[in-house]
Length: 344
Ligand code: PBG
Image (cartoon, helix red, strand yellow):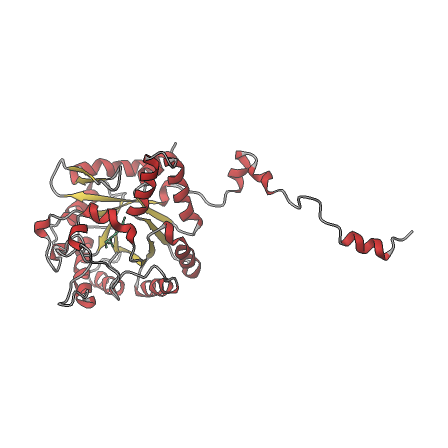
């Protein structure tokens, strides 16, 4: 006969079979894990930052960054060759400037025969297929370690600084750099640099803007590496780099840099700011990069050296996290180690 209304209602209310679903089925074997994996790291996602010294046959370890060395050009060339072999698309150059060349206005940054232009020319000549990126900022060149010029009240003067940065970027472009990367956080510098590049006929020079760059304590080892830490002393960069409490502001900064002519945007630091990477990627759908900075590298290295973390495992997991957050690429001091692992 017909089920009673009571039986029908009871059936509707009976619990689903336990468990309702078994997501572990897809995790059981390596082949299904591979099949359903959403994000992957590839050597082509990586940009390798390097510290370059004047002179020849010079190699100096950076104490706070185990495995990272400052190298003179002759010793950097084999590193560049290694990047090409590993399929790393680009290197980012950071100069260690002779203290005797540092001035309050950082004018060595605009010297066409300075360290960076010389290294760029040599790299592009030897390895034309390797992308070369240079930092546009004055901190390696200033006697006070700030990214711009100061007034009497130690305020970083925006527009005067931008005028010098424009000359720095033009100098780098004239040396043949592929990507200029303003990391200074002055207002309006992307537009000023883009206009100057266009006016100079440098229509191919790409601009990767450090758009959302925070005033972070994670840059400490980098400042040791380029030798700006002592010059900076107890001063900070909070008057131009972003407040770590802000996220909407990052979107406004990125929007401005895109409107001013950035080809690619960057969030920095990396791991502690993956929420910003995700918001920027979702909002603008631009080529978006993240910088796993010196302090992040130092933390992972130190823990691995203590045997507290598995070096290769945390390296790969940390880099994959950038892809998951929406980054198209990562600047990382692990680039060669990671690419080597990925190549098997
Ligand atoms: C310079 C610059 C910094 C970094 C990249 N470019 C340091 C800073 O802003 O003080 C940091 C990179 C790192 O920590 O690995 N403007």
